[in-house]
Amino acid sequence: MDRRGVAKDLHSYSIYMDDAFAKSGKPWKAFKIFKDMKQRAIPIGVVVAYNTAIHAVGLAQGVDSAVRLAVQADG
Image (cartoon, rainbow, N blue to C red; front, side, top):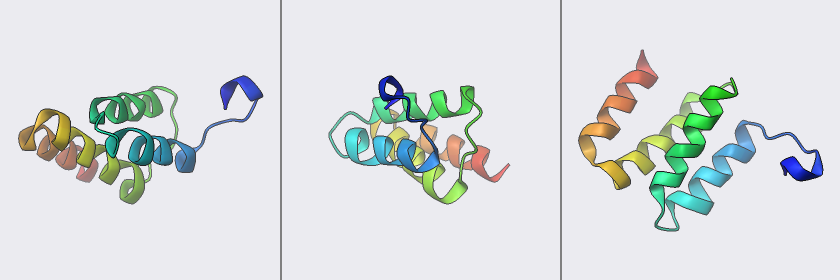
């Protein structure tokens, strides 16, 4: 998308995280995209992006890491 001049938004990032990575057996890549969103100051929708990131972190790093991220989402 970037190469074609189309800016990524919350919706496109969420699709990348969920479909392309979390469901493909590469949840760590989904969390990397989530961190990229935060660095680029993309407004993170709690329901969409955080839930996808929490799911991906839970798969990649375990329940404890997922719970920490969930607490951060509430905070």
